[in-house]
Amino acid sequence: MNNSTALKGSPYLFFVLVYAISIPFWVLNTIFPIKLPVDNLPVTDIAATFAPTIAALILVYREEKLFGVRKLLGRTFDYKRITRKIWYIPIIFLMPLIYVLTYWIMRLVGLPVPTVWHLPLLTPFIFGLFFFAAALEEIGYTGYVTDPMQALYSALAACLIIGSIHAIWHWPSMISMGMAPGLFIWGSILTVSFRILTVWLYNNTGNSVFAAILFHAVTNTGRSVFPGSRSALELGDAAIAYGLITITAMIVVFLWGPETLARFRYGRKGQSHGLD
Image (tube, rainbow, N blue to C red; front, side, top):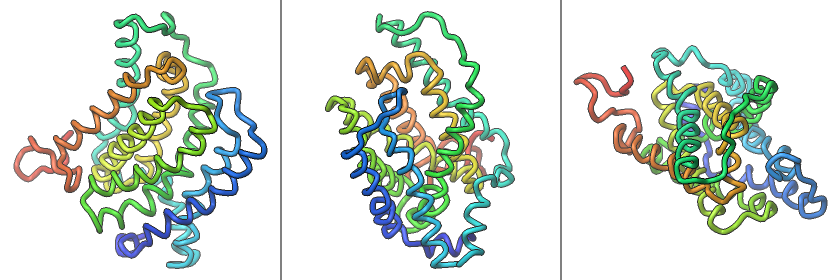
């Protein structure tokens, strides 16, 4: 999908379709409340994960037929857009660093977390599953809707809108999981903060959807294998993990600017992206 097509996209129709596709799965969850043994996650959420990609493909087909569909799906592995390889550092290591800090802070304040960490042998398999799931979300949220939203608003405003709509999308599952009100609020803040970080990386890597997918996959894998990251949800101490992510997003907005998230405040003249 070229830039001109991206700017002609239908962002709000996309959001409507995402919800329309997801609603049947939410209804099924009320009838058959089957949950995964991990994280108490409703099984229907797995099916609903397809909604962003399906919605994007429907709209792209309407706009560009099969050519647009192939082009959008091809952006799943558009890693060649990442010309400045240094951006792989935050893509791969930013969230694991935050998880390490979360673990350290939880131990420092005396919260119950494992004192020994054993990396699960199935981590590569887990990462593969999360990469596939991340692609199903980011093909829609990053590959289709981010550019037209940034054409209408500033980068930060686009993030706040996309993140808020996505956060509300999670509410039926969060209610089904019986989350406490405080965790409910923190989860919504996390979704918005995560969208800011994702768009920041996207805007600074030549608009690479692969960068967004990889960042998303590393984030979810880390939440599953790092001690203290998933357990924070169980303990009700998400304020530490989610608070660190939110602070990181705020720092990014300050340093790279809310208008584009790509103009580094302290870069040398003629350089706008930072990390150069």
